Length: 331
Image 1 (spheres, rainbow, N blue to C red):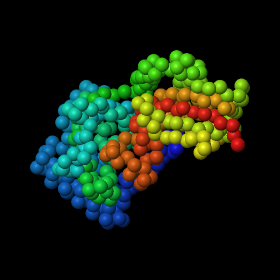
Image 2 (tube, rainbow, N blue to C red):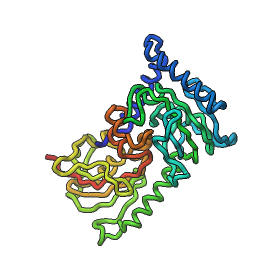
Image 3 (cartoon, rainbow, N blue to C red):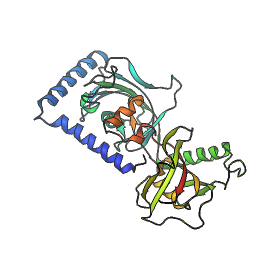
Image 4 (cartoon, helix red, strand yellow):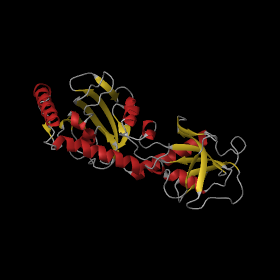
C-alpha cells in the first residue's frame, strides 16, 4: 500500500516515547528490575572486555574505536554506515562491512527512522569517519520481543558502527538524479519506437520524471479532491517489485490532498483518464528515509508488530521508485 511518510514517523515517535517511558517508570518493578539487570550485565562485560566504554545519559554504553576529532558531526544528517550487530558477547546476527565488500547503508539519524532506538541515539554522538561500539540495553533495543532463536527476549545488543560518510538532502537528490538519468539511457526510454509513446520528461517543478506510454482522453485530467482510480506496478531501480495494484483491484483515493506519496500524486496530475505513464521518483518524493532496521532481514516482523509500516519492509531508506501507472475511468 502507498502511505504518507508522516504516518510512519508518528508511529515510530510513539514507539520511542513508550520505550523511554518504560525505562523511567518506577511504578513498574519488572521494567526497573530488567533495566538494573541489563546495567549490571553490561558493566560486568565491559569491565572485562572494553574498559574504555562509558555510559550515556540515555542508558546506552559506548566506546570509541576510531576517532576523528575534526570530523563533521552527525546530528540529524543522512549517514552512510557499515555495521556489525550481535547479542552481547555473541556471534554477529547482522553484518554490513567493508571487509565483506558490502556497500554502505544509508539512513537518517534523529528522526525516528532507526530501530533499535538506542542505536539512533548512539549515532548522534558520532562524527564522520569515526567507529563506535555501542552496548544497548534491552529497553532501548527490542524489549521483550524475540526474533527467532538468534535474538531472545530482553537481549542486550552490541553494535559496532563506522560512519563512512555524511550527506544532506541536496547531496542525495543530485546523486539520485544522476542515477535516474543513467537508468533512462540504459533502458532506452527515450527511444519512442522501442518504448512508446513519448520521451521522458523531467518535470522540474515537481522534481520527478514522467514518460507517457499510452494516450488517454484528451484534456480529461484531475482536479483537486476528484476521486482518482489507478492501477500500478511499483518497482525499485533494480526492478525489484515492492507493490502492485492490478486493474481488477485498483486504488481509489482523493486526488491532491496528500492521500498518497507526493511524487505519485504529482505524476498523476499530468495524466489524462485512460492514460498509462511511467513515473520515476527520487526518494524525497517517495518514502524518503523509510526505515532502517537491525536485523535487516527481519523487517516483516517489525511490520507485524506495527512498529514500521508495510512499505518499509520492501523499500530501503533513500530508494528511487518507479510506478508504471494507469489512470482509469472511475466506475
